[in-house]
Picture 1 (spheres, rainbow, N blue to C red):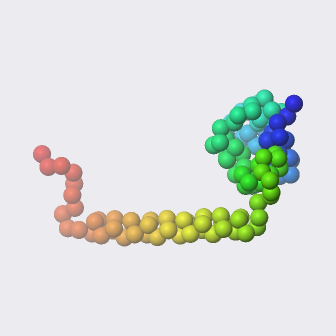
Picture 2 (cartoon, rainbow, N blue to C red):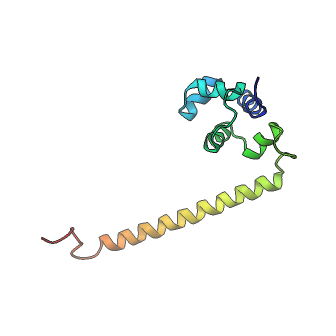
Picture 3 (cartoon, rainbow, N blue to C red):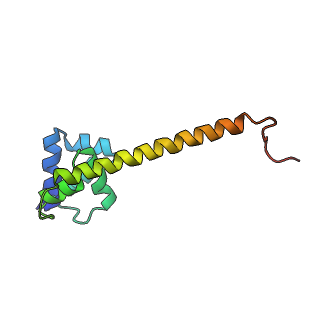
Length: 120
C-alpha cells in the first residue's frame, strides 16, 4: 500500500509529466528507488532524498507535506515569496563575495615577483 508521501510524490511526478524512469534519471537513482517510495516500500526516506525529489518535481517540501497530509495547511504565497527573497539575497551575497575574491586574485597576480612556492 502506498504511503501518503509516496502518493504525494507520484501525484507531483505525474503533474510534471514525468515517468518514474525519467525522474530517477534526473535524480541519478535507480527507477526502483522511485517505485519503492511511491508504493510505500520505503517508509523512512532520507530527508536529502525527499529534498532532491521535491526539487526535481518543482514543488516545495511544504507542498509535498501538505499533499501527503503531513501539514495542516498548504504553503502560503507569502511564505514562498519570503523563501524566494532569501534565496535571491543569498545569491547576491555569494556573487559579491566571488567578485571580491576575483579582485583579490587579480591584485595578487599583479604583484611583482609572485610567490612561486617554497624556496629550496
